[in-house]
Image 1 (cartoon, rainbow, N blue to C red):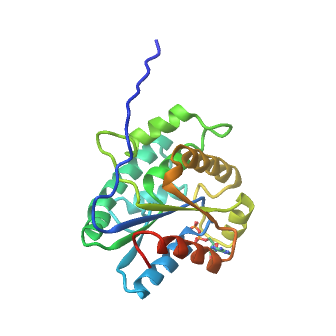
Image 2 (image 1 turned 30 degrees about the vertical axis):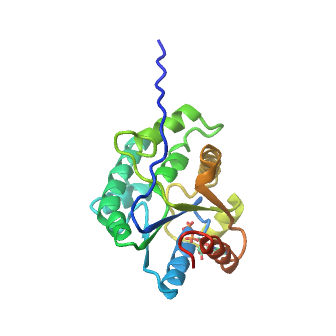
Length: 230
Ligand code: ADP
């Protein structure tokens, strides 16, 4: 017997005074670099902005565990991994994101957990995206859940790079995560394409093949036309 579980839902929006900005993209797309440059730029223009990185490997209750799983030292089932990240993200929201947004600050997150969890959680279905599986992941990880729904960023920049560019940029990196391999990145990129298709209004597409400076300029220009009004 097959049961169809179906319910209408909408994405939960940020109702706090601060601005919630996320950078998304595959590993090597430039999120860490650009989130810090943007943050410095915003602070220099008189705003109060800060960057938070996710998944957390250096702060929070689960940092050590997250780091050992991401480095491949500890192995747990993929599903358990996603729930662990959801638990950590819940703490990050409560401890760091909400208090800053309540004060009217700008929060930049290097990854928005709910999007990353779909793109990365899908990497075992390599050939094609299984829409029902992706939706169940979104319910499980809090994006579509009516029980504990995370609010989505006010704006999400999707930094788009080819797999070869990402791999080349990461080639200098010493400690690689389990995800930083060609076949995994290809699957993750398909996961992001699925997300951009599913939620077209949520993503600002950025051509991140360009120089660091050009990518920053592109994002600053988009932000100038947003409620941040640079
Ligand atoms: P991510 O956080 O998305 O994994 P990083 O910001 O860590 O990506 O960038 C990976 C590497 O690529 C870093 O060495 C960084 O200096 C470099 N890099 C980032 N953006 C660019 C760019 N636009 N052009 C060239 N190199 C870049």
